[in-house]
Length: 301
Image (cartoon, rainbow, N blue to C red; front, side, top):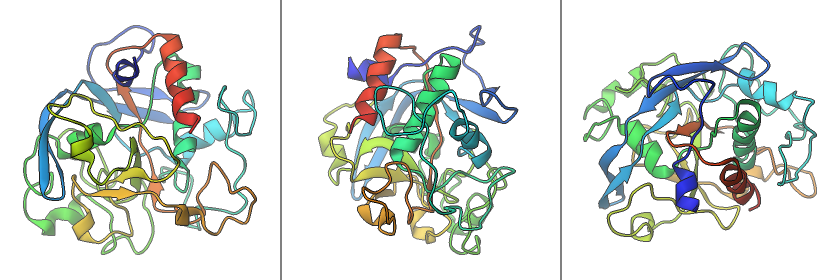
């Protein structure tokens, strides 16, 4: 059942087919653009190992979720603030400005949130729209980032071109930037490399390819602990060597080391200013019961 829930999605009103669409963040004019990613098989790599992996059809957000979009959820007074897992709940307030002066309104990517906050945004979208959204799996993320390429970078072998596609240590001036200013990859996805690193659904495992077994389709390593989780894409602080589709990072408790609260915030990462997320809508729709079980499983860790 869990695997079935991973490949599930819903429909905004009438189904318009498997093509790009946009929808307003509920209660606002801030649009979220979704790009169709036709499923298939690709060579997934970790270190020196590689394995052929299959993924099903899904839509992915063309951009990282922005402050403007996330802020609508954060301010939605229809939902309480707190840490319950059996209902949609808004994150509690940040005790300091975790944008660190890098920018908020007008298209800056939402940063410094925990994986729980990112997943709760997805659950809020589901409650508001009836459409099942979630974070991408590692396999979906890498497949979408590669966009059909088999080279080191999605745009070829020449690392000198990376500045046309990504914000990273050499060109960001130590700040994240507004989404969508660099070139998209071949499938119309922006900032897959650099700007902010992005949460995925999976628990981080060093031997990921071994763990997912032989001939895997829609693989997922479901988290059983809060740390470490898999993070992909590198960020505005990353060196060029980290900006490849196959490079993997893992979350760490040190990302919240300066939080003085007891217990530390479930929602915010005081030292995670480099991490954000984008959303996925898989093609096949789950039942309402399956969708709620999925969110509860993930938000109950």
